[in-house]
Length: 334
Image (tube, rainbow, N blue to C red; front, side, top):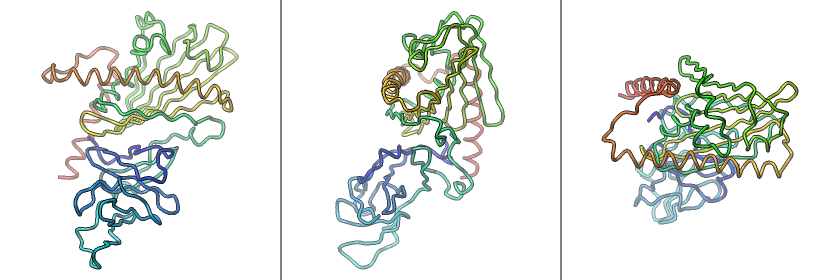
């Protein structure tokens, strides 16, 4: 898995007074806030007896181990050992580049120097006052992060897996209007269904006079960020809902999955926010269920490759890009 990228470590709301433990890219980390509120991330292992520092507490911006009281600052330097005056070099622990934006705390698990010239995936609508950005959902998925990546790059599944929520008439796929764009490290998919009806869930946004045009746009940036735009429009109206899918590997077979939703309609409607949250959670749980089921089947497939379909053009392109980037990263660290 790629490490020289920004990954969502947690939501800003998740990080309160108590430190938060996570496994990210096969590394145990602890996330906490300094005295001024700035988020920091350290290796979640006390060097004394390997207790998780996430069981500890924060005092004046310093993280204190719950076991024997060793204290660490935001840079991972041990600043206090209760039983002795001398602090040996082995007492210091790894720190990770950290930033906070768009309602998330981000971690850079790779080479710290490379983080200086990189930024988290751009989502400017999440800083636009004309959009409601209250909904952020978190799921722990017992399946590879690549399974969710592939799921979101092949939205033909929406007609079947989500038939009773955001689905569309599967007969539309007989003449699939899928457009795929691949440029350098960017992949996008676009479907526009002309003269169709609104999905049941979409009518809750704002019911439009039918027929409507329905647009699905998914933009993928490595390693696993997919920004999806769902648009309903007719000659007089247009409503947009964005779902930013942030996939953070935990291990090779599990991942953290965040979905941040933004809308440019009825932005002050709390009742609608609650309904959208519930409706979206239902949809995303369907994705979670299928990803975990796929992961469970891998023990029976003996590593057999997936059979590719025409609809997999974007998925296959992302795989080639990831393979190229992984080779480059391996050569850089060799």
